[in-house]
Image 1: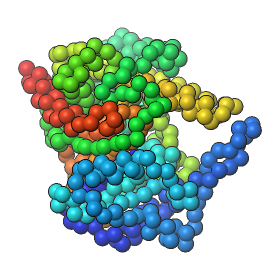
Image 2: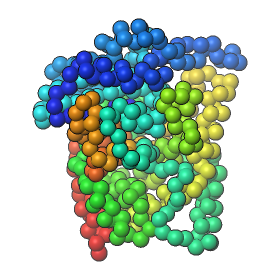
Image 3: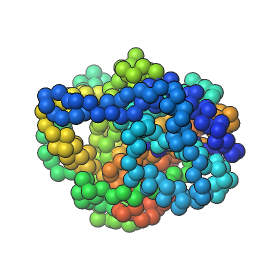
Image 4: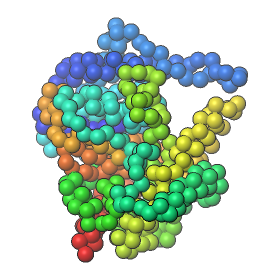
Length: 426
């Protein structure tokens, strides 16, 4: 997980080290290294977190928080994040790093973090971000596109419509985790590898232009039953459609889908200072993009119908139970990893939604100018919706071996927004 926190003024390295030590050390996994422990059922060794003392952690901060030199341009950052993706972790240190980059080409400064997903999921890490921020607001926090407790639609439903929706949800929970996984995944395309187990190691990142949240809400208000989430997911679909229309038209005729992480936590289990709750507790759902659909409103309806079913379906909990059962069975780790990678690599992309503060906040003693968020996954494409200070944009992380110039995808975001905006006004 690689968040980018931008600032207008330079950052002082020692101040950043002091503030991060103060904020992160109370969180157990940020002061722990991974150790090997004996497994059960003669399965060999498993991994566990072991806390380090304050003296060890203070001595380690010169390596955990550094200020690399010579990084100014987007090309410099892309080369740097590719190296981050390929580098192995130091076994004697925790699974995170922070980098202070002053004097970027646009005049700003950047605090970049690299956090291994083994430490926590999006729910936990977003709580960490809010903990680092100096000034707070009361914004809702939801790092995933769909929450299980969410209502399926803002529009009222009849009794029979509700019954039908829940029936679809239960059918999805029965069909997709079992029979659905036996069906072929997405064919290869500009963003998808032929073999998910042989993913590339050269990553690059970019962000789309920002769109005012008010404009997204205006589109929502003009489409019956819409939510902000529905509009954002439709924009994702239209963005991909416009990209493939320009650069790989043949993909419009085949399946293109994405996984969406979904929290399966209970409300009382979100506590970053409690090691029992801080970790990974999420599942996955899939959404298929209606790329053949030319009418933006009909595309919206097809996207929304899937999201509505996902929100009421027990599928995420079924998938979570299956994964936990699989990883605890008496099988070699290499076999389990191979099976999980096969399933994870069936789709083209991974989507997430990071809802940051709704107003400008202070962090490390100055105003936080902007926020981007990327997940470096063994897929060709990651799309992360990021909301901060009334603006919405998409962080894109791609594999350069598949698409050398994915700024073209970022440009399609603006076109997709105009298309949906005009369609909603008719």
